Amino acid sequence: MKKYIFSLAVVSAIFGLALLTAQANDTPGRKIIVFSGALNQTAQDEIIARVGGTKLKNLDIIGAKSVWLPSKASEKALAHHPGILRIDDDILVSVAGKPGPAPQPSESLPWGIDQIDAELAWSTTTGSGIKVGIIDTGIDKFHPDLIDNIKGGINFVIQKGIVSPTQWNDDNGHGTHVAGTVAAVNNTIGVIGAAPQSNLYAIKVLNKRGSGYLSDVIAGIQWATANGIQVINMSLGTSSNIQSFHDAVIAAKNAGIIVVAAAGNSGGSVNYPAAYPEAIAVSAIDNAETIAYWSSRGPEVDLAAPGVSIYSTYKGSSYATLSGTSMASPHVAGAAALVLTTPISSAYDANSNGLWEPSEVQNKLQTTAKDLGGSGYDLLYGWGLVDAAAAVR
Image (cartoon, rainbow, N blue to C red; front, side, top):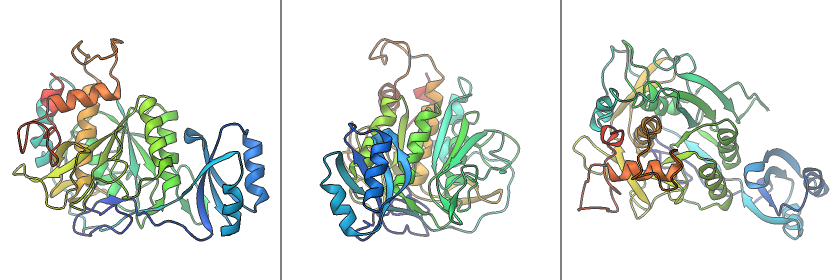
């Protein structure tokens, strides 16, 4: 997560991170209706219409629909229907805190990329062709340091009363910053990403103010599974454990997607989705390889990565420095993309199928990580600092 305290609140402007702001809609508003599976789509729509509700989108990945309900009474009526398993709050998610963009510089190797030894891995692989989805505020589609690697995108955010799927350009900056750490191009300007030849896909679920709904995030995960995305980065989170969110993450991993997520910036427990066992939870360190005081910690942390004063691409074809677990997470997503292009050895091929599975990639990243803190696993750094060069050997 980034230092944008993703705990259903706004993030600190100093540490640009994204957090799913869990503000439950107790009054009339948006809900996620999870059906039993015994009803077809037409029957589901009829049930919603019968109580005066409006369907906003299908969330087939979890057997649900995002709906607008006109009253508390309509929610109660649905809750008693035998064909409905559960009604979840469609919580708000938000990201805030935008530092002033820096002028466009000559190319340099960011300290975080150097710290994880990504540049030492490039003689073996640059992540060519791996599809990485950035579930965030979009990506600056015209950024000169990203444009060659951007292969497409989707928008789920309502803008001016409508949803235009093609309008995924980043109007906040956060998603572009994350994308640069994953796959900024190795050219003559700006920065270089951890996997500089991987393919980027913008999955826009947060608007220009950095706010959106959980159902949009789930829709983004659903799109990723349907479009062959191999790694998704979610530099966002919430302190609320919403079952629909967990179901979507489970479905993504079952579809073969490596889910990487920011641990959070509260200095306390790990946020969701990072706290789910199906996700790789990433805490943040500084350039002295010390945990950031604001980085979330706990038994759910899997790996650590650079997250303090990270310089990367930003909206408007510019660059900016941000801090947070939001910035740490894409270092691991980039390392995962590198691993996917290497042959899998029998030591990691748990099911002996000759292909990398999400759990196998995670195992490789963890066993090759640089141990930090106490010997072996600990609650601050997990298995240690991700080491891209060691992971591709």
